Length: 102
Image (cartoon, rainbow, N blue to C red; front, side, top):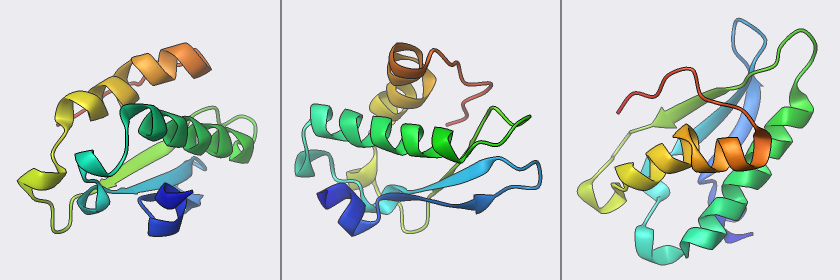
């Protein structure tokens, strides 16, 4: 619930291709504020909520990482890559990302 209240990420609208947009405010992430398990559960919740927003023929979502006021304290690239690029997507949705850019 803390993750939702702070607005770490949220779903809002669709892109030009009709995909739901998930905004992730990177500056709000501090590694010590939550366990990996809590962050993983929040990520799964967000992905499942986005999945409910899908309308045929759209079967993907758009994730936008807002890097405004980003600092080294917010940097956990290895975990973001794991969440977005493999572990969570594959284990819980069976989906693979098209591309991931650091």
